[in-house]
Image (cartoon, rainbow, N blue to C red; front, side, top):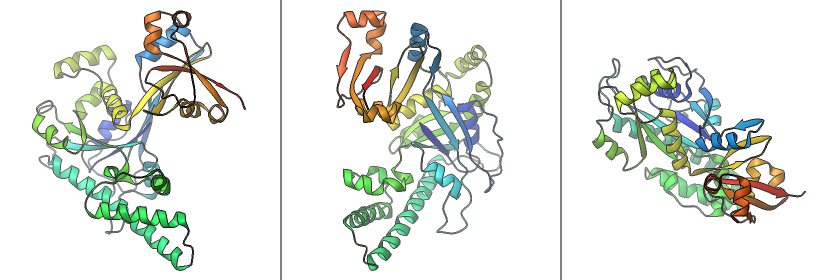
Length: 355
């Protein structure tokens, strides 16, 4: 999973990045248009993987991962300029979700926070970026039509992008639209920003953390929202677990920022985890909720999807209750599933295939 962190200058975005990844990226009060994104990949700590690893004692244990990308929002030079550099835009198009870091603390340069205004400003910028993409594409399609290149595919794309253009002009996000399978295929390559799942990270100060029920309720009318206290939690991330736990209890923080955001992101993106186990490797894999056994096989390797026969399947819960894989089989809880089986969170799969 890839999550892009975006926010206005001095929102504490890089502080949140350091908190989530235990990185030490430079935190500055001054934004630079030339700065490249900070990138870090972290393991998704899952107790189920730990248990499976202890049971199977594999040569290798592989957790699912999240890649966090801390994007810089440069000052726009013109009404038609992109809010991201070309290199950043290429990366942000490949993210699975966007996290808007919003300031909710007093700042020496910026003064008092205006969180709702900041969210609206960022959202407007994202819509403008999508609008520019849509308009540019419509111009190119119109040129193709004039040259006699009026294929069915191009006409469907033109119709779909005009719907998107109308939606954006109405100040509405693309993610709120419904598309047919063919329309989805027609616009897949554009990776519009307002089509991506989005969450808000309310970055509060130590003095007001946990005291923003009204603000969180207002934000939650339009966005999934989670509250952090960035500077404090960045310091926590540099401590060992026992030390961090003491300070977390004082602030009423139940678990680390990374764990909280991971659960939050899985819910927003719609991810679940399945596992493969054995003496060589225990591994966690991410797929979207509702995907099938053959799609899960393709996540492991395209050959498994192409030559899929069936999936040997049992659940993590059945394994815990039974105590061993052998006991799972003896209880009749071991199943053979076809390619249309909908994989469930916690399923343990072994793919049978033939090419």
